[in-house]
Image (cartoon, rainbow over all chains, first blue to last red):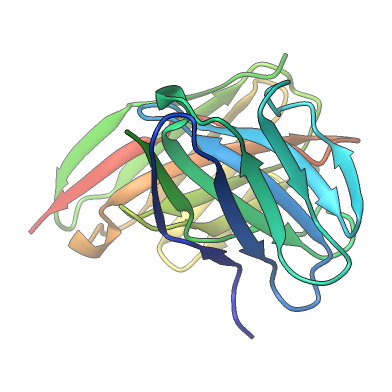
Length: 116
Length: 112
């Protein structure tokens, strides 16, 4: 049973380009979460998705950022017109339907985004 | 707004020592608390999960305690080894929410 798969591991973009980060959840997991870790900062929640639905996007910047989790295929975090401040590690996590009190969250290895 | 603080930010110990990492949170209305390990360039590995109704959890040389009323948790590592070197993160989840709130972590170095 493969874990949470994220790709690419490293992504370099120039200012103004678009960044697409992919996340395939663990088998049997239908819930996906995206977190961002800025240098010297803790992980911050961005968005929580189920298949074809955004459940909670309260941590997403209002502009340039979007996320989707289509019926088929991986979840995508899209950042348009990237700026240097977007440079960070982006982590995806997955869980079975509904986190209960005794369910752990499983994280991918992250995508390190560097904006030049 | 829930805030999670971890002390110390960094810790260096000789191999074999027992050690304690601290985590505090401002809102005691949590659903559970998790301790994670993060290795450089890698993702997070969940170590222990304590439900709000529990006081502690143990796994091998690790023991995590939870005092919800005082907003504190500790991670105890017995007989530390160089392979324990990593950043340890504490995170809480509030009831009715699916969001984990993380501390900034404690970077542990165990010297051979």
